[in-house]
Image (tube, rainbow, N blue to C red):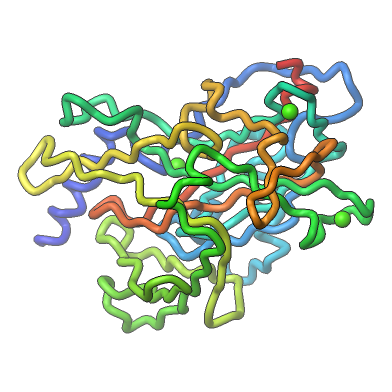
Length: 325
Ligand SMILES: [Ca+2]
Ligand SMILES: [Ca+2]
Ligand SMILES: [Ca+2]
């Protein structure tokens, strides 16, 4: 009974907030008729590998028997070809790799592509002097690959990170590596998904009451552990105090300045990216003529109380030059 009440309260609060990650993508539903033979949208999903998370196995839905290839197809069905559905990448490191039917050109002095997410701003922040724009900003790191050897796939040495506003700050952890452990059914919710990292240690992703039946760990992988590597951004979620009811903290996830997916509204310039931001693994700038593949991964390892773990969502990637933007 008590649990049920908590659930109702949480559901109510989520509705007030706009539904957090459940909110549909808010891109324009314009009718686009391409004058070109190429599609400005995603035409391939090469790899969909979310980390454990409250929406993993549900956005998109995993069904018994679905393989990695089936999940890639479901992800493509959701976000390819201007569908503007959604995939959720789970906790830190979870990723999607998408491709196109052409090379997105790196036009000098211009942003080249947009990554659609489902970020939105809080309209009821209890903090009268917020440090910036915030609400549900779940920043994802964007990487790009130019198919230099023309083998039709992104090779390991072809990937470059787009260095966003946090890249050179000491609060950002480079070459971060995390391993998640598959839970068994008897694992307590508070210690549901165990993780260890190469910096300071270990912890757990809690299974929150709002998603008490969610499996969190991607069910189509055979592996008992999942390891992800990348750049870890500092936490951006702040408990701004109780709102609507006692004991019900209002979490605000503040947007980073620029250069991250699912960080600002899809209609803002902050959702667009310049291939000139590409850097190598030592942070040196690289010049790319364009990109054939884009990888997006969740950039924070964060749990915001009853909101649960933070996950980047992706709803599409658009070639701005083909769209004449
Ligand atoms: Ca450019
Ligand atoms: Ca290649
Ligand atoms: Ca999101």
